[in-house]
Image (tube, rainbow, N blue to C red; front, top):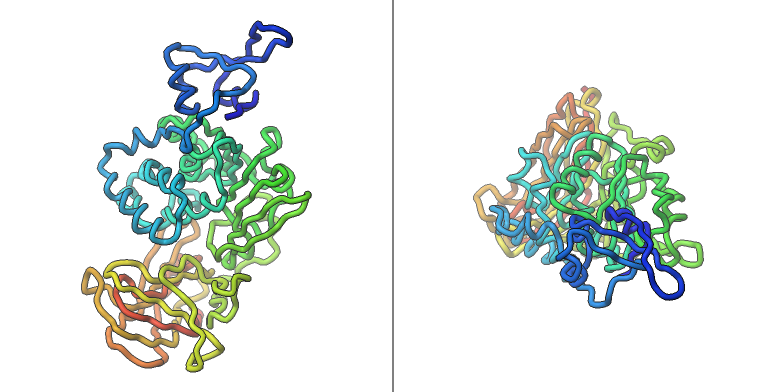
Length: 457
């Protein structure tokens, strides 16, 4: 593993001059605290002394594929260990993440340490959770998926935009050389830094600032990961990426985002659209430059009939976080050439899809929700309440208050029919997420033309 002077300094090193034949190499004294961030073989050799010396920024070969993680101690014998293992097995690996190093890092990182105490019982469910200041911690699958797409290598220097709780940085830490993370919200940034220090993550450096500008003093970076969504890719992040480097970022309109992978090649960018997504907006300079602003007085759903696809030809735009979903091209589709199929054979396992939209409860009093629906081979989930349904969860401006209401459930098999219902919009609501799914039930749920119609207050 190669350590440059900047990395060793960031680990708390003090520059000294060593003696030797020819040119005198620049060396670094690393206090024992910094050893946790070094590869296992190096730390084992250097650990006996309270202070250790690394010269020339080069550590002997033999680095392990996964850096020792402070999360191993924090996660080793805690009461959440079984829930964390289930999360990795059922929510992450079963949903398509295959990189063994990424799965192991998710298994060792104590997510409950990065959420408010009141949210800890939900820490190992595959869901985003509020962390304050209108921000959220992403769901575990999203974190693992983005990490895998970043292709983290042991020598990488990674820039993260949007520290949030610090969880994404903690997952990256055992997989790369150094993580540099920026958070624009001072309260969150300081809290995350304190959490990471307490847990012993010594190869993560944080700062408070506007991530739009990147971190030029620490550039260049091998990889950049962005956990909030601007309308367009900030050019400074591209400029600070090495040739051949990778950038993973959600971009687009506030409620119609796409997670993209960008590779810097010959100064340009090769773009791969991965999946639709819904991240909190990148605030600061990026938000000030946003052209398309959401209108909560006229909420509507995009791509209601699942006809618009990403370039892969298999993924509908605007709808995100699908589980056990596919598109079906059929002559009897109610409208257009294709519709959505949700299918589940294991009671309790998710089979659903989501879309976010703005809604201003000061202007909109109710939402009428309707969809074309066909049901086959239905069975209950792990409880009698788990049957096909549509749910709408409303959030306030700070995303600290929410309420969920459902339409359905539907328990009787049927051919295509138009179904729906009406839900009240709380006066404090400013945005919402609609979920269409089997809700833990089993069978086949075919869906087309999911629409909402607002009624003014």
